[in-house]
Amino acid sequence: MRAWVKGCLLLWSLLLAACGAARARSVTASAGEIAAVRPAAATLEVGAEPAATATSRPYRLQAGELLLAADVDVIPAIFADDDLFVDAQAGDLEWQDEEPVVGVALGGEARAYPIRLLSLHEIINDTLGGQPIAVTWRPLCYSAMVFSRDLGRELTFGVSGYLLYNNLVMYDHQTNTLWSQILAQGVKGALRGERLEVLPSLHTWWGAWKGLHPESRILSAERLGRLSDEIIDPYAAYYTSGAAGLGGPAATDDRLAAKALVVGLAGGGMARAYPVDLLRARGATNDVLAAEPLVLLYEPVLQTVLVYRRAVKEATLTFQPVSDPALVRDDETGSQWQRATGRALAGPLAGSILSRRAAPLVFWFAWYDLHPETELFEPF
Image (cartoon, rainbow, N blue to C red; front, side):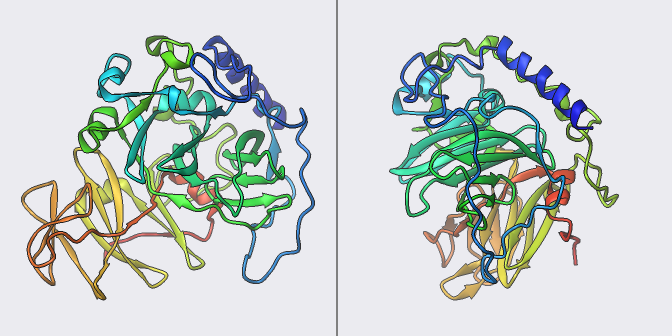
């Protein structure tokens, strides 16, 4: 099995090379260059593991779970700076409105990261709104997650070459700790058990994202020395194929099709998956996870799900769809809220804004492999 996986990774790395993914030559990104060279040693040496504590409850790797599938940095992370991004007007010359992107808004700034570029690099180290972030994408799992890189000190991340049940395993250059993307925690090394802060993001379309954030900038293919029309996502056929991961799921759960898209939420020792098809049909889904009241809203223009906390001014609200697909209404005050922003536009709570919760989309098999205890949401 390992030889088969390595063969797939080799074929995929050749595709990356054909697309020019290994053009990186320097440690600091500038126009026309991809800063994807690891600034430390050429081999990945994982640091010593601290003793587990009852409060951290780190993920415990079992024999054979961590698979070395490729050399470190074969997939080159990007170290971004402002020069790699262009405004929406210039972005429209490179990217169509239908281009899938990961959108992030922080500190009054908004940026979009095209999925086609993320598929070739998987990690983008960036700073947005003054906050150091890592934008990550694992095509096999269809998982886009954005993390704060501030853990008391600023970390930078690269692609380790390891897989944990098909999922991206990152490493940080400062301690060589290995980090699971979906688990959002260190799984081996000096920072084992430490958790990354997951930041809200949207997996949506460039046209919808710039409609929500007209001031947004987008990662430019030309600034990376490429032409967007010539960039091919090696996973384009995989997303709709019957294959699930490189070697298939580690376990099967027939409650959903392996590649059914779910929103995965974890917290308070609990994990729950919400099928996107169900959320789309319901429009507004009120739930409680580990004593945290939440509402999951499918937004038809963004074509994705946003999750908000339902506690507002010491009251817990219950939301219902209304005739306008862009809005919902709360039962308690009758206020109307915009799905895309969580802002109350009319009613007694007008001007209030719901607190957003990070809620990544992911294939069901990938979520279940790393959260085998997960619940599957079912309507009351």
